[in-house]
Length: 397
Image (cartoon, rainbow, N blue to C red; front, side, top):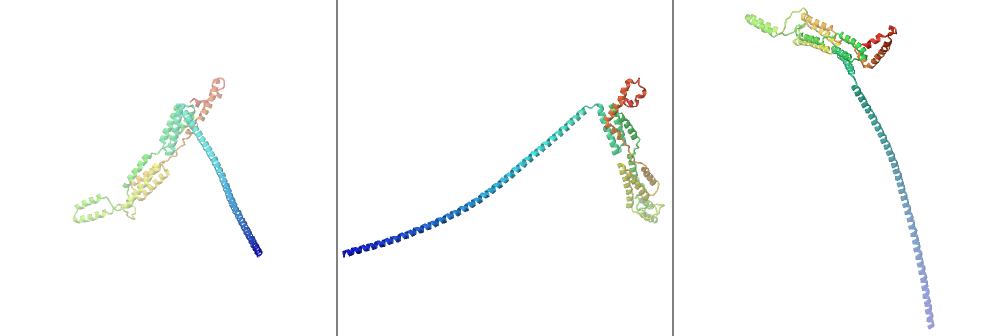
């Protein structure tokens, strides 16, 4: 029984060990499965993590590539701007250099021009200082001749022109220059021509026309007009006071009528009676026409002078009675019509032109004097016909 119990115990122990070994096997299998599952899960997680890292790395590389490309494009743009800026700076530098060169050239040209003008002025002053008294007298004569031409043709002042020509001839005579003989000869002709010019008495004519204006009120109008002097009614009133009462009434009525109407005998047919205002207007119109005559006389306007005289004469013949005063008035207008207030002045500019070309005259004079000097020593040998006395005569004078 004891062996059976031991055998049972052994069987029980083996059974326990077998159970233990099976449970340990399954436990190991389970542990192994768990380890394999954990390894698979870890490998899967590692794979996912690696994929995620690779994805993140690609995105980072893409972003980095894009940023690098942007940086490169910005760098290219900056390089382009730098190149453009360098080109602009080079262009501006060239422009400034050219402008500076132009300004320097212009400044040099102005400086040269100023230097030339200064040298000319200095040379002119030196020439002026080096002139002799004869040169100054000739320059003074040239000025007087220019003044004479201006006074004659611009103003018509014949007297001043003649005096200026005579003064210029006096200056040329005092200069003693041998080349001015031809100028003085022409100047003598011009003085003679100027002396023959008839100058109208403008001042006297002006005064005569002014006198005609003062005589307008004394001229008798052709047509009768109302109104009369205030002295005549007073005289008739004094006479009426000395008469009888009936005669006084009649004279009073005549006096009142006489204050309104002026009775005058005339040979012309009277068609109308004008008012005092119209009579005054006619006289004022004649004064205005005479004023136009005076204006044209002062302006030396020949056409306006003649037309104004004709207009004044026509107005006088039309509106005034032909008595002694009117006839004398018209005769005075006719006398003015025969006077030429603007004469045709002669040309006196030739002497001035010759004097301005004095150098040429001096050369001609020197040439004229050379034959006389060469012929003088052999005058006794050669026949007299070879000597040119006509050429030597102007030089001697």
